[in-house]
Length: 321
Image 1 (tube, rainbow, N blue to C red):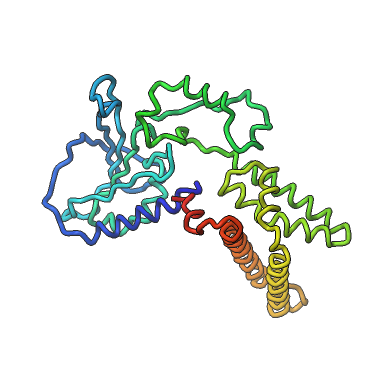
Image 2: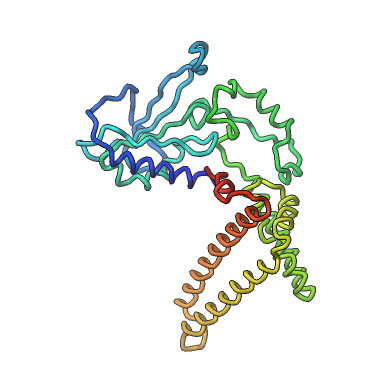
């Protein structure tokens, strides 16, 4: 999921560029298409397959089918060059993203076909799927990499040579993997417990832990660290800058308290309680504050790495490319 938004933005940019291009002569499809339905897509959809060599270099041996879904343009005098959507992450099929990308292309779909193509090894195009390792111990959820034994078992179970499926490399299973979310969830619980206990112990230890572990979430998301390693990585990055981070946290906290207090005072009902409108405004403010805090932590992480490791911020952000 973390790779989808930049990929969608790139696709949208390509679509806008195509929209400015010249009209081409009308052409006809070389793939037999028939009506079908995509979950979450209300528009009319045509589906079909295109048979290709599994080994494109040798052009011999087994053939596989590439699946395609087309959402036809809504007007008859359409432009002949379509918008072709390719999924962003390894192993991710484009057809399954129809419900997410179609709102982006609603206006373009007035005059252009939208083509969703599952590249070889992804989605419905001969996917390279590996069953989850049910025997893997719980400890593997805390590790940075998938155990070698599991990788070897996966490779042996595949009915294909992964080298012939470059678009599936590194992420052959299109089903959701919740390892990262579980690490974030457990890490957040540990962070809350640590900081909470620290605040009970005369506040200062809690502030120390809060500052020390300030960027543990980016360490998990960006660097795929395990829970324990993420806390250590955060301690390493914040070293030497903790007074600055503490000051930043306190400034944001004080401003948030003042704004929340003002909302509570201004939007009271006749009984002196916060009114329904006030509660809604406070909830909206807390939502904005949470989003702002997340952005602040992410920006802080990028610049801490740039300062300590000389890593260019753009190079760090390329993890989402």
